[in-house]
Length: 130
Figure 1 (cartoon, rainbow, N blue to C red):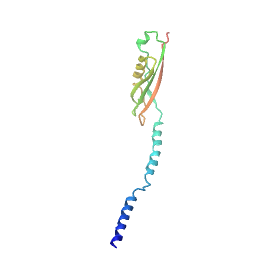
Figure 2 (figure 1 turned 90 degrees about the horizontal axis):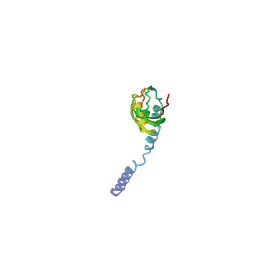
Figure 3 (figure 1 turned 90 degrees about the vertical axis):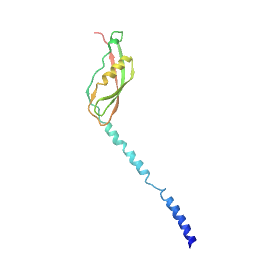
Figure 4 (figure 1 turned 180 degrees about the horizontal axis):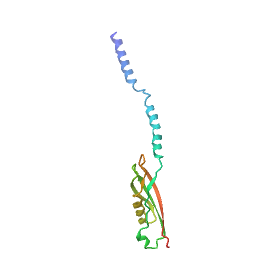
């Protein structure tokens, strides 16, 4: 009977090592994670409410030239407290217009929002003579 107990011990070892492998619980957390992102999207749908807007002006150096019109596109981040956290020029017809636009946008203030958000805006400049 001693010989019979050795195979039983080997079988129980094989069964013990094989039992943790078929764990079907792994797919369930993946399904739960997929359901979480829509809740984040709902927070981002809060509309931005501009409280203070400072318009950029045409720099004096350009006003003294034959400058007639131009544009500047600015990308910026609205912080949760409503301030502008960072701003940069994406494109501009003249570098001074880009700088003036960034300086103006940095002064903008929004109502507080749940999470920071990136925004882009384009300014059109027209130097019409009176």
